[in-house]
Image 1 (tube, rainbow, N blue to C red):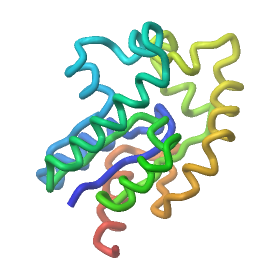
Image 2 (cartoon, one colour; image 1 turned 60 degrees about the horizontal axis):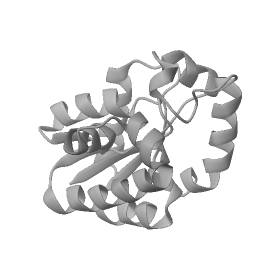
Image 3 (cartoon, one colour; image 1 turned 30 degrees about the vertical axis):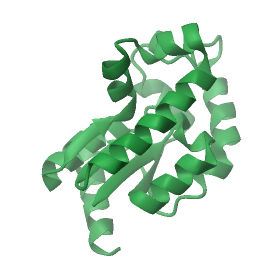
Length: 168
């Protein structure tokens, strides 16, 4: 089984994904880190030097590659993976997706360095987060397994996902 953790940045996808994969004995891939490893350039630099369109094309290509390579995997794609309907369809077809959600203020509080987050490195990051969440709502709403990560311990979220998996 391949499990995907979908959601906006800083909703807990990577942290939860690592623990979930450990519990299941699966591989774990953070797609942004995977892209950085392959390209030897940061996501921020890709955005800055080649633009978001180039990044999204690369992201889509590598998502397909990873999903074809693994049978037991927890994958954490970047928050914008859902901006392409083909990616949503692929994630729903080839993975068991879980949408992780958090309030904008919690998202902002979880981000250590805004400079590493090119989409929200603005004068008013909270308002930018709110606008992006609103813009992406129609995409995120295509996923049924919703996990609210606000004010929860990582272990509790992992067990919540494991319990849902048992009932699917």
